[in-house]
Length: 326
Ligand code: IPD
Image 1 (cartoon, rainbow, N blue to C red):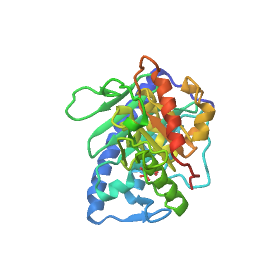
Image 2: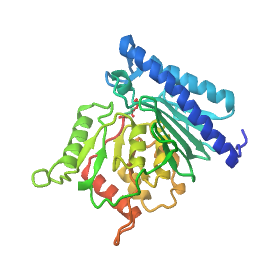
Image 3: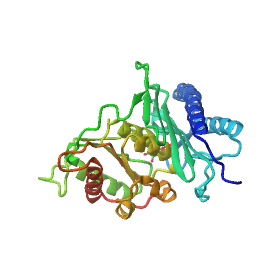
Image 4: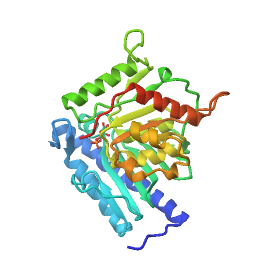
């Protein structure tokens, strides 16, 4: 297929299409939630905490079907259609990258933080991100170069992200951080996660290397973690083990909100000074399985916000342990 050339009008149509698709999918997610809390069936994918429901599959089929009607030539990467082993490499072709229900564990338990995450990749770059939490009716969206927004009940106009102007953040000790237990519970891995959480939360007087951050939060959805960092409600979010469909939309929203987005420690050290982020090797970053994002930080008299973001990511990586995702 010759590379499709998209115009600015195509992008705004794609954004509107994705927003409306996210809302329709959200209705299905909401009815699925009611049904599943009554008598729904849950399958365990890799182990008893890696869950999938008939609703993940239903929502993905709905989204895939609508995309193929409107954009029959575009590619599709989706959580439920991906069979491990065949890792699609990013090409120049327009590609949707979708997680039908991100936060399946929350969905199964009725914890109201689950969403649909629709990312769109153009010329190998995540370009559109739409994330919709149907339980709170919160719609986050961004188109590369046009800012990131949140539509939320009670406000007649979309709110630009971050919601309040970027604040300073001097050190990790003042931060509220998003971390996740994830579904990889191998003994060696769970120990490293726990060690990392202890060092982040612990008081350095008693915990070697302790940062004593304000607190740690686990939202249970990578996409909502990115959106909340973009919004300014979390200072940073770190996770090992996610997939491109968990993070693609969130990355666009975060970048458009002035966040700094990167991958593993090794990836960060190799690419830390690259600007603009358009130079990023997106294939490596999206499939890298290790992700960190830090919110927009205000410049101070002595340090540019971008430098603070990098300094804090480095400090973070010197505090936590890493492991290879399964
Ligand atoms: C999961 C969620 C969870 C994260 C896992 C993801 P899923 O996605 O984002 O927060 O810890 O790594 O796989 O399975 O609910 O779509």
